[in-house]
Image (cartoon, rainbow over all chains, first blue to last red; front, top):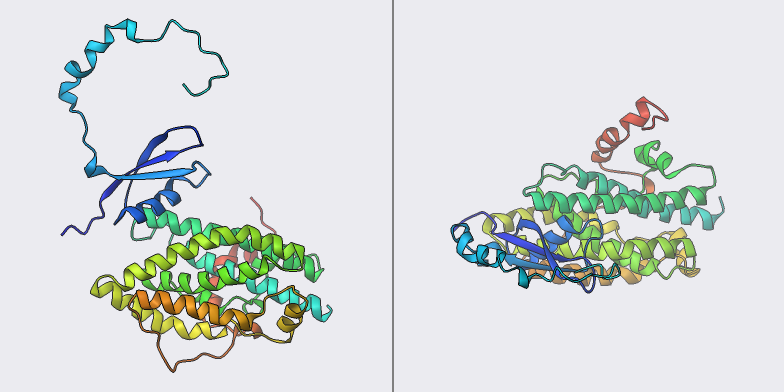
Length: 94
Length: 253
């Protein structure tokens, strides 16, 4: 058995209405302590109203090798980008 | 000072000095804790306690009426003038001792602050209101760690039991009351400490049972802090904490 605590990815929601955002990672023996550690490490300056923790090992990531096939095709399809609209200043989080 | 002011001064010192001395002890872990996450959590706790110190000692100075600031009280008094619970000054020893000391005092602080929030003295109620929330978190955290470590590996259990055996006798003085306390309780300013003792016992007995730890029997410790009689550890702690103001009186950033 490994004596190292597993790594957790921490997501914090800054205010109501926004999504949780990835803020970093930390070590903890289980989910409950990961939440506490996240509270102490990442919300010291009143950054959040909600915390999610996910075991890093449970995240499946896309492979950097497949970057071309995965992402480049959408580059050329400008009609998918809504860049022809003016966004009013009042819409802050888009 | 009149008896009422004198009692109020003592109460503010007991709360403020306990927070100050425990905060100073916990801050000794800064940069040395067993894990980075724990290091930051302990530093947060120490800073919270120093914040509580500031409020309580400011009130003490105000009540005393001799123009002493919170800093004067923290840095220019000698050991026999301190009124902190003697448990707070006990050395860190290891992480187990540190967490056990923290838990026993957090449970005391939580009860005291809950009561003091309803104080007839608005200044006390306001300070207790500000300190109560973070102290509730401190207690949740230290209780959780006591249970995890007590009911953990063979080694962590042995360390927590050793810490409990050493530190438990110092809790005897937690809820003692003298004439001054009775006066404050009668006026609704201070807590009825006799009523708090069983609540503290219940909290601590339940958590220590969950931690599979045995409360040592037959070991008691006479009251000390109310008369300014401390263990030998306080003088060393104060030497470290106060030396700069003692060597360079009035030094500022």
